[in-house]
Amino acid sequence: MIASSFLPAATQMIYDMGLQHLLQGVTFECPPIALAEKEKVVRCVLEGKAYSSEEIDRIFSASKAQGKSLYYVDEEKLAAIAPDVIFTQDVCEVCQIDTHCTQQAVHKLAKQPQLVSLSPNNLQDVFNCAVTIATALGQEEAAYRHLAELQQRLDTIVDTLRLHRAPLRRVMIMEWMAPVYNCGHWIPYQVAYAGGVDMLSNPAGDSIVTPWEKICKYDPEVLVIAPCGFLTERSAEELHLLTRQPGWEQLQAVRNNEVYLADYDLFTQPSASTLTDGVTVLARLFHPRIFSVPPRLEGKFRHLQLQASY
Image (cartoon, rainbow, N blue to C red):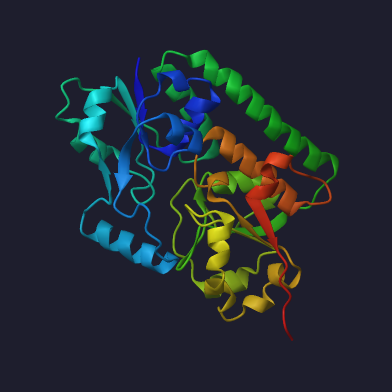
């Protein structure tokens, strides 16, 4: 059995379950360990470019309007690998190559691989994707062992919130800064596990452009900025896109110094382990007197010390 992964989340789950010996062929955005060991077969025309958030949004919007994809497959490398199965997705054609583009790339292959589309909508769906992956690789039990450990972590967070009678925090998780996008799909479920509620979110659905005036009226207690594809350092470079907005300094999260940057893979890379890490981090951000994070996650978020000027 030889598998190729056309999305980072599937690659992460394959490694998490100890099945990486079955993996050959990944995408350029996969975890560093996979990029060091596996052949890159999926690339992007924007790879290595330093575009701003606004430029990225314009480029992807124009590409979508024209029915074009910014991703492409190195067909020669893929043919050499000759995978039995390829994992792809249909959640977001902006973030990753989708099943349609994959089909176009593989139809010339001498051996036609099985295409397994992983398209989760909520957090349970993401966990189920681990089972789908392991089953396709003939290693179903590996998924159940892995998921049992992650579920225990989530249960411990919920039990701790109950034990301390922690209040529900009014929060916003921001998936993009220019324009501002709310959070969708599985992220609102992560928020709930961590003891918060995001009333601007779209559970089990796409994230959408959210007017700044609506955010001001909602006035979140905690604001977590985690643009898709950005690490905290990159987000910090473009924070001015938010701080220049009218009413920024009057937001409760700003006035009370509860604004955070967080790495994208905690939220918009839907592997079971990274999303569980995301819940762990959110619990710490929402309820810092109750929760801490393990050392390996301390560098995944950044607390912004912002003082309003009056």
